[in-house]
Length: 229
Image (cartoon, rainbow, N blue to C red; front, side, top):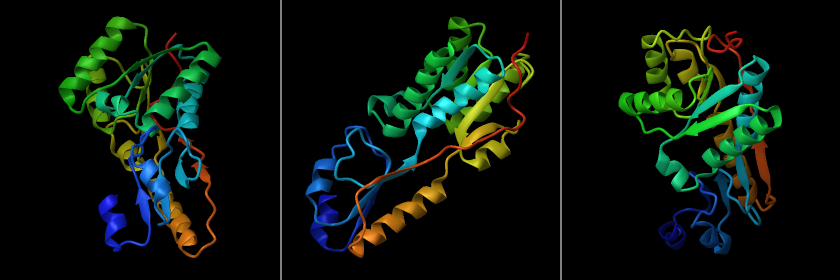
């Protein structure tokens, strides 16, 4: 950011991969150049932000599974480093998941997961060891989607007859999975478009600092169904 602001080569900035306490924010607030964040830090004062409402996303996933009768839900999350950095989207999704689970009296277990088949297998084994009655999964880790579905098949757990799976992912991932996934889409194109609109308005001198949260939409497909009796 110092190189960009000091070079004079850019008239404005769009920042991504925003952490809750992002170390770039003090510099951003001091810079005379317009900027927009795709993401949401803990303190949004003096900032313009565009993002999916990830807290509402988490709540929507739990509500869908609870409405189907699932009482034990496991969350396969991003890699541990994502939570260690307090990345905004991951933390806010988790807040939404936990808040709705408490409200509905659902048991929720969250386990971060590194990329790949081996880490997904280890995470799944740990989940069933801790909560053998788990019948619902929320996956916020694209790299774990297909390994999870394959592992469930190997264990003789049918989706969605025995286990339901919801993913927070791009539509392409949900549609190309071996089971068409019930999912909340990541509206990357819309977020990018809105961020550009905001930064262009700022360059024109009539953009106000504000926070735009895009409401999540859950699409029901073949991977979610009623909890087994």
